Image (cartoon, rainbow, N blue to C red; front, side, top):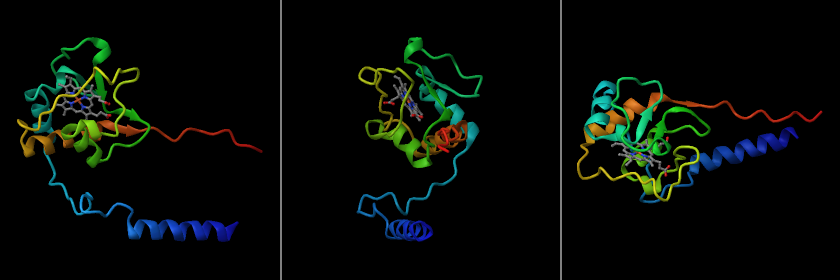
Length: 147
Ligand code: HEC
């Protein structure tokens, strides 16, 4: 049993070191300049993100413009943690995003519009800096312990 664990961790380390995703399109090597949280909140309003989103724990945003069932909450407790990369992907490449949206949201007619032609890089970085700390990872589910 002990050897198994050692073997598995050795294999895991090897897998991490060799990397499973190092093709030419890998995100490896990409380092973010830090954005500005307050400017991010302003950009979130300027780019009309508030029209479809509320942000967990943030007051002072204009009220959403879409029907209540279409409002997607950003932040709060999530089962899978949102990395910086995942949030940037959600903003600039929504079709590829590994995100969940709102519970019960009909993903067919709730589409996130593209802002790629209008959003500046600075706005993107500031928005991600604004949103990232709003996400909290849920503790892992508790499985019943079999005696
Ligand atoms: C017209 C409505 C609409 C607007 C405007 C909008 N979004 Fe979205 N957004 C959505 C919907 C719908 C989803 C859920 C998509 C899905 O999960 O398939 C989403 C998902 C997201 C997510 C991923 C959420 C998560 O944690 O899973 C982020 C981040 C996000 N939006 C940021 C933004 C930002 C930043 C802007 C402004 C630049 C913006 N959105 C503007 C509709 C909108």
